[in-house]
Length: 144
Image (cartoon, rainbow, N blue to C red; front, side, top):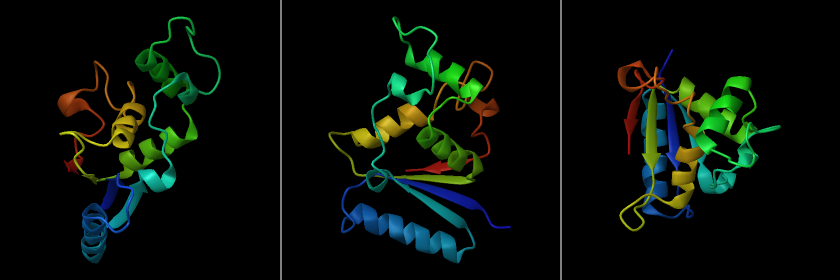
């Protein structure tokens, strides 16, 4: 079976250079036998803000809400929202992850920063036990 690729794409215009680069990557990877999924963040209207709304049900400490701790507990309990869980499933399945985005003020677009903040939760993407060579992405190739 071929490799699985995920392209996390963050650009508003289908006529942009970034769109052309994404489309070329899809064509080339598909021709090489890869199964390709694209997370088009603008088309998905992906929520960029990391809030308590990312957790289904009650949080541990609403008065002193700590996003990383609360989402770790929610991830462990299976209470993370569906949009985050879906992206985590795509990441877990991928052998190759490509981030395609324009540079905005020497950085990435806010929607992609929000995707990173919300999807790479403590517990899923990293922890004291799962870091560096022991983490969930230890066999995954990433490009931007």
